[in-house]
Image 1 (cartoon, protein in one colour):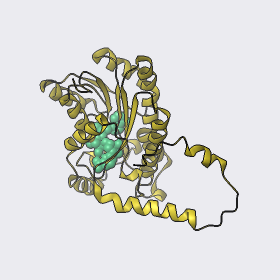
Image 2 (tube, rainbow, N blue to C red):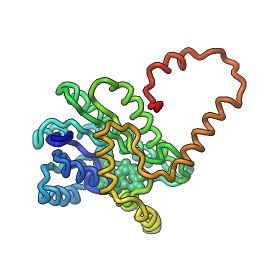
Image 3 (cartoon, rainbow, N blue to C red):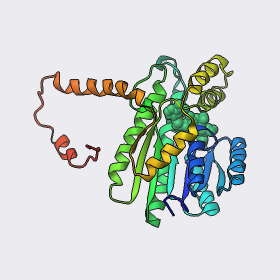
Image 4 (cartoon, rainbow, N blue to C red):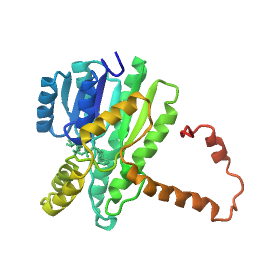
Length: 291
Ligand code: NAI
């Protein structure tokens, strides 16, 4: 059997888009999948579809932003399918618009779902992985917005940069444990994000849904990659132990512009503070792939 056949995965945001693509790829590879999502109705439909396709799945209704729900959700998943050894912290939302138009409630809502929930997921499952031993893997879905700033997406960009940093530290801290870490930074993928996020934001604010935003975002996303193909790519990358997973090469020049600005900033100033021993100390403990 080729890993992860016979393993159990826990996928958040599994009722739609990239999470569903990952779940489908896992089922095709012979893994059991706990499908976790806030949308109970779609979750039931997806669970039925995957079961009919011969998959072993469990529908786990979970609001990832509610820390109090996680342990029970993990227990339900493990009671139904067995010990989990793969965690995909994938659920996410965008919202808020320009920073000056973003309310604190919306800012916090985006951070709670996109990054705090990834931490809670790790806090829930990492002790279980360690207690059980053996190979395990944690993947966090960030975004190109975790590597490149995007105007009108301030709350989202902040949460996704945080997800990339969180994943980098987690990778270093789990080096040599048999627990791999990946961070997925997709470009545009044809999912329902343009609908699910504005709907949830309108509900949060008690406001009417802005149909023009839904139409604009959905039209843009519709041009993106097939989420099922992304799911297959993700599974191959996880199998290979790849850390940073990129879906679209077209973003490279933008990422390079960010890096070039950072590199320039190190040469265009007078060094006036002497040697920083912290940097020298950290240099030996950071496992950025140099190849
Ligand atoms: P989607 O909207 O199709 O799927 C997201 C799923 O997450 C939905 O089923 C939704 O019900 C669920 N969800 C939302 N809030 C939740 C909560 N509080 N608790 C549990 N589940 C919740 O969107 P998509 O695109 O598949 O998004 C998945 C991830 O991919 C997100 O983290 C998103 O930021 C990221 N991403 C998406 C890109 C795209 O172009 N679609 C590009 C880069 C990153």
